[in-house]
Length: 119
Image 1 (spheres, rainbow, N blue to C red):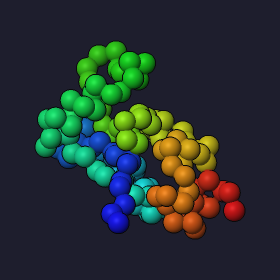
Image 2: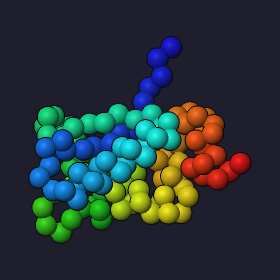
Image 3: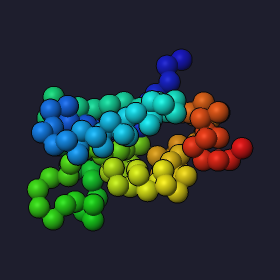
């Protein structure tokens, strides 16, 4: 049986912003280092995915000017947040809750203990 990956991180591979690149690397690197399964979606290569991302970010998370910048994180159709939200969840030791994941489904047990400090 193939396991579905519900977590998606929307990134822009050709971003001209050093800050955006660092934020994307921080999110992706953290997820990889902690064994969290996710799909990286490059919005510079997929116009349809970019439009979907823009349409599914809540109005209160939209910038006053311009379009929302990556990284943007979703679990299926549920918007988890942007880099700032992700960073806050790390600071609060609540990454799994932020991502809408249960510890057994998408994370190995030792990583789950480190992420949420349940053990």
